[in-house]
Image 1 (cartoon, rainbow, N blue to C red):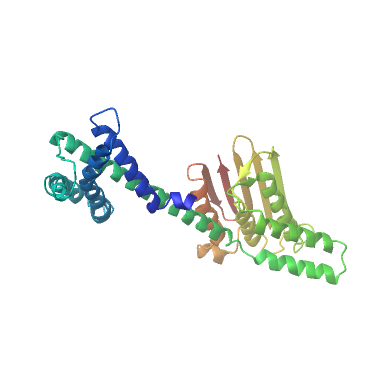
Image 2: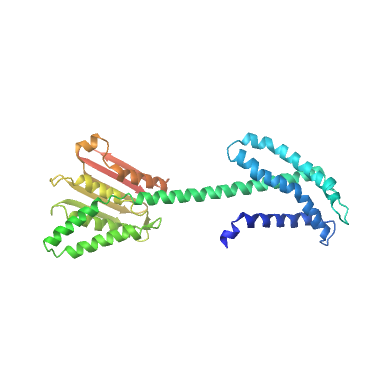
Length: 333
């Protein structure tokens, strides 16, 4: 039904039937609606058909849609003149050729004719432009959705291989934690695959996913590894774009835990009050990464692009780098 209503084969006939009815009432010379009123309105629409479809099929596509505004406005007087000529020919030449019991002439003054022509011209142009704008908005929305979905799929699967290797090691050692680790990985993958389709998700779910990820990463680290995750504030009722924070945490593990030295660390802090404040700090990666300008890689670019798309005027991202540390501070309004 919606498809039918949006079809031009439905919209155009409805528009013209309403138009004929309105003009028939406008030109009616008595309070009683008669056949001659419909006949006059139909004849009056002959030049209107010409005006509207030349505008829709020729002038707008060739000039207005291509940004040739001067040519479009210069062509309007010519279109109005041609429409007036067709109006006169309709009543003075075409109608007398019809075998009819009625005698009919155009009694509309040229000023009124011009006003009616301009109304139809402006009305159909506005309708066309509004439909084009709506179509463009839909296309942009689809492009945005496709881009966001593409960004979601860029999450590095490297952690999955590490997690499977850790589970394999636990299984070989017949560790009691093996089943719990498998469950954590299963919950993490389920969230990534099935629960991030919405534009926004509860922050508490996102935090739970990060906690599962951190626990899985700890499996490959030494027992005394310095990994901290501090939460402050109430998470209930707060929404956030899914997997927005994940690349930052993944990036910190990738570079902050490259070796098992005592200097390796990751410090994560999340505070929720009137805004969402997220801070993550880690040991700086090796010098070759810094010199090549690749520190952060696709993870940071992923986050930056998603912030531009989802929080265009509601975010602030700060990247700090010293000789020993790398830090990202993110604020979401």
